Length: 172
Image (cartoon, rainbow, N blue to C red; front, side, top):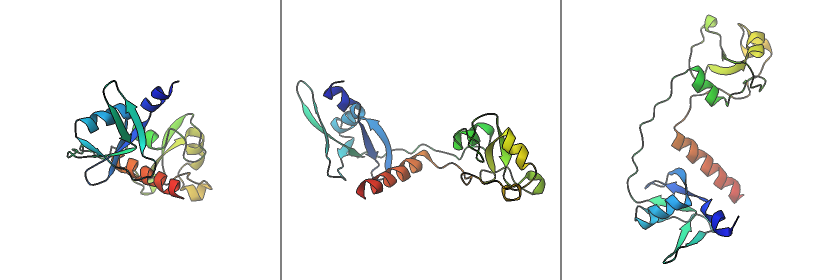
């Protein structure tokens, strides 16, 4: 792989007008945003980015850009609590043992004991763990949840949280 191809495989972080990290775009898309004056360079680190050469132009592409135009946030609703969405949230693995085989949905506090069918009470569980837990709470069954169930968050917020955690790790 040549150096030029490696540069084109890089990605650039896009910030909104109010400096919220929105997403990553490939370097080609970043160049288009810069050349059409829809974005401006934003350098929050000392490592500035890459130089891209064309027959008639040399452009410095930073690792971060900020949109000059208002980005319309797409409306996003918390998805319904259903099998597909719970499995997606739980990364298709049992929240008790980690298995990815024969997955079912489990109510942490069983419905027969007043548990609701909500994001913070439903998890993915393999048939074996679900059967072992039965009509008990995880504590009563001597089982522990690997992660605390919660509703999915807006993708932009998830990206921003991960971005700032990565920045903090890189600064340490």
